[in-house]
Image (cartoon, rainbow, N blue to C red):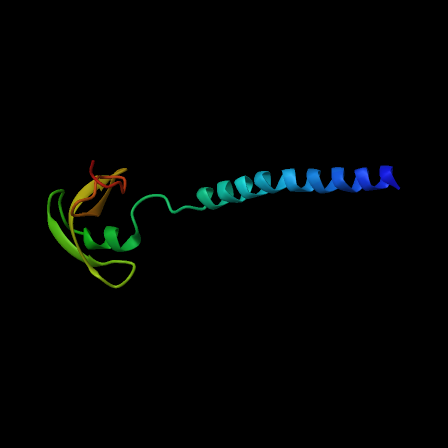
Length: 91
């Protein structure tokens, strides 16, 4: 009986130790599905524009975003005011 109980405890501990690995793996798959590059709205706002031109477009929540056209990986796209190229906030 004691041996059986120890085996159950060992199995439970082993299963518990797997939880962090599955959470970590799930996080990696979510990051790999992350959108790369500017959104379609930012690209569309700069069609027929030049680098440095000011534009506005609708953001993800329907808000008006003021931006400046910049070249990003060979493609012109609107970068919102206060943002660095690549999507980061200024330091």
